[in-house]
Image (tube, rainbow, N blue to C red; front, side, top):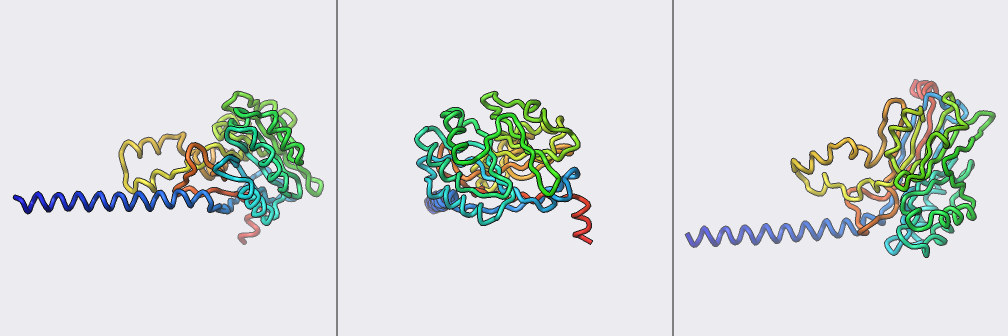
Length: 294
């Protein structure tokens, strides 16, 4: 009996040691990962895309969250990497700061160094408005960034054009998609910038071709990877339809959505199985894709 009790005590001690070692390894990884920016390439086939825009490259950055967790030099490094991708257009999809006006100028200054052939465009996010939306918008504008507030821009190339629209943030109830699209028509290829991906259903009803969003940070912690097993309650939560909008590319009807994982973090400066992201979206026309495959 004594041997049995001793054996159980040793087993419990070993399990605790293994748990502590695993937890320490995960924590170290979660502290390092926010500094490891990943470049994601995503091809987007759009039926209505003019042939002149086949291969058009949009670089997307989102959720910078300039704060004590992410300094200006790290934003500058992300900007350098984005510029190295030689984008045709840069899309910024909100949440440039977390909670203090003190970070507005530095973030805008860094983002003002972005360069693209057809310009740098932005929408604001909930954190921007919770801090000072007007100040953030003015700071970006002063740096040459075009901030879209429920409006659209005509992007022209070789006599053809697409429409780039932007809505203000949904969470603070400043979004107005009909107004953002009022100067567009269904036959045009239309791309929408919206900080919050929850707009996908309304955008699909309006016939938008592509929505670019952020807001979710990709979940910041990849729980499936973290738990390493299928917990029934967690698995059910992860299977909820709203979870499918957490990160990456999805489609609703003919409307496509890409959710960028963002550069920064909120609440805690941790990421696990969900590195920060710069996205390169390559727009393709179906007929041109078929000829290329042939």
